[in-house]
Structures are given as C-alpha cells and as structure tokens.
Image (tube, rainbow, N blue to C red; front, side, top):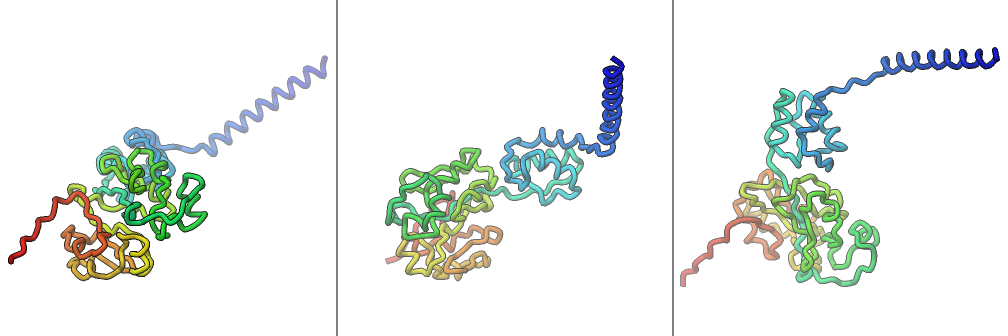
Length: 280
C-alpha cells in the first residue's frame, strides 16, 4: 500500500514539475504575432494563388506588416485597390502600378502550323515536352494540351478547340502568373494591360532562322528587323532571330505591325485601321 502511495506521489510531483518547466519554456520561446496580420488577411482577396511571390495571402500579409517600404509588393488579384486599402490600414504608402495581363506568344494555329505527327500520351504539356519536341515542325510553340488552363484558379484561360491555342479572358485574368509557370514552352508572358486593354506584342517564340521558322509556321517571326527599323521609341529588339517588343517603351503607335510580312505582331483591342485611298 505504501508503495502505491509513494508511486502516485512521485508521479504527481514529477507531472507538476514538468508542467512548470513547460510553462516557463513556453513563455521563454513564445512567438508574438502582430494582430494586424489577421486584419490585413481580411482585406486581401484570399485567393492564395502565389502571384504575389509568397506562399499564400497570410504570408503576404506578414510581409506587408513587417516591411516599412511596401513599394515592391503587389497583390495581383486585388490590384491597386486592395493594396491601397491594406496600406492605409497599416499607415503606409502603396505605389500605384500598371495592371498586367497574361498574353500567349504563339499564333501557330492548326491552319498555319500543321501537325506532323499524332501525340498519343497523357493530356499534359509537361509530359509532352519531356517526351519530345512536339507534334508540329515548331519546337518552340504551344503544345495545346491545356496545362495553363488547368492551372488557372480564375477560369481565365481556355484552349480554343479549333486553333488548339490558349485564349485569355481579359475580364477574368488577374495576372497571378500561375499559367506562366505551368507552360513548359515559356510562351505565356505577363505584360502591361495597356490603356483600353490595347496591347502590341510579337506572338512568336521561335528562335530558328527565318526560312526554317517560316517553313514550320506561317506566322513565325523571321527576325527580318523591319519592325525594329520603323520603331521610333527603341522598343523593339532582335535577338536569336526573334523580335521582342518592350511594353515599357512601346507607345502603341502601331507602325511596326504593317511591316511584318508574316503577321507575327499581334494588335489587340485597337480600332480598325483606316484604309489608304490610292490615287490613280
């Protein structure tokens, strides 16, 4: 009987001692979390898309709270409106930034870029890209399996069943950048949305020489430099046989597009060009 009582007393004393030790350890290493983090989380859209560069909205809220200068931070889903609200709540200043949107730098539809073989495998661009160069003569173009569409949480990008190319919905795209990461061919890019949603860009990623590129796709950029020569704003560069338009320098003058013999330069949401009347 005495042994049982002694055991109970020892175990009880040991339990109390360990509880006291755990209490002091918990107090010693207690992590303080700024209550403003939860408040900012409530302001954020809660998409947890990772477009801000952080692992979800809570991690982004922590960055907003902890950084005095938040000019480099942006929630692409919430945009300038949400950033302004969060900044005002924290007594900080948010920098207004131009909204971005995803664009597909490939215009190689089935009509201009015929299939040379049939891919009979998993419906995945990643799998297809890891297997071989693709089912057309262009090894740089869209594979059309829809990884970008599957990755989009906002239903903003779909594969056109006729062209087998991705199409971006201007109203739904939040520029989170998930589709950019999902594309193994790196043909999706975030660009400035532009005034009235007007954008100009080279819809091609083929880096082969002009003749070879054009043979595999009728709308391929040939690197002819004609567009570069007419640009008065130094917005067009030619590298690796491919033209690229810098949206930071482009003034949307539209002089470059008519110079492109393959129609590789895409003009979106512009009014129709006026027809030139030729004098007889």
